Length: 253
View 1 (cartoon, rainbow, N blue to C red):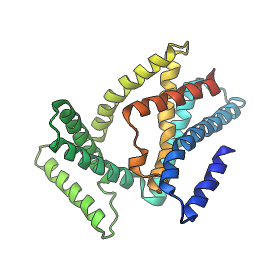
View 2: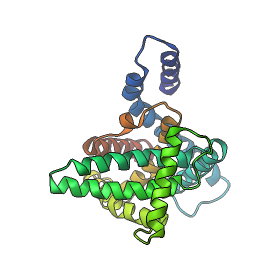
View 3: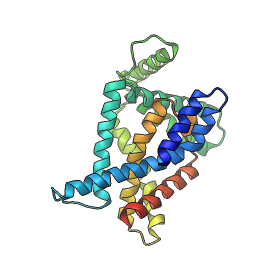
């Protein structure tokens, strides 16, 4: 019931000339995100219960939820890309901006540790932006799209000269090397309060996949700007921990 109430307020704020819509979206986005994740888990829970009454499923618990939500997410991504041609373009643009920011910070950074972090972010974001943008930039002639084409051409030149090798699989594995230990630490800290470690770890991954379904339309269609979407590392860890404990209590305790 809270979700449609917030949606009505969102609509009224967009229609009004006297309100700060950006500030309101920023303040309410995490509430909408959390309630949307709960709603998605509930829908999956109902679907699993309906299926199990007809077809006995060989697995149960959090792992079943993870598989169902991954399937729903893949369908959702294919739908966004097929209908709007926006999924790869948006994330490629966001990562290109992220890489440019990291490159600027790298040039102005005196601290060697922070410089190394910005260098890693720059390289990873640049390669992933290239993978997303290649063959996904529309034919329209605008200054912004031309900047993206120039970026893709520049990376193409680096790849052809043999100085780089961009692979989506390699980037995915590199991200996993960073993400899996972080999620494992969060799961271990939460599991101290008698929650099974493996269940918590699977729920964290499931929530991250579920979050993607809320983040994509919010960012692509302008509900939330990318700078307001980004959280600090500490806030991000606290958010995912709160989501995990809440989802476990609601669906698996």
